[in-house]
Length: 185
Image (cartoon, rainbow, N blue to C red; front, side, top):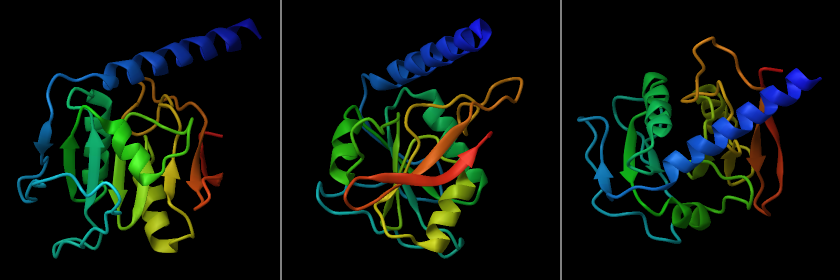
């Protein structure tokens, strides 16, 4: 039992450290990971949802990811999305919380980066297959969240391949959540 408690404490501290490492950044600006995708000229309007166009070369819609410019795990998650076939525009910002507030991330459900794709938000280290399922099924709701930074999730991979169990949640229009996908159960 004590070993499980110790593992839990270590994972909690690692997650807290990772969130803290992603929180601050001295530089703000917009960058595009893919040279084939032009960078955004401005941030989306504060009250306008991002309805992403579908690029001609891909069946998947454009994904706009807002993150701290210094966050390494966010960049790894972006690479996971690109490998899965998404075209990604990265918006580096020192104020990711303003994006979270604009799109409606419920209190306590935040993570280190926020993506917007085809009218939905995607908060945190959500696997690409869950996002593809969201876009195919188009459930009623605002988007998906994975609170915190679960060890072993995309962008938070562990060297030994272990995955901390976590749940991807669907956020309803009223802010309530329900399970959308379970991982490492």
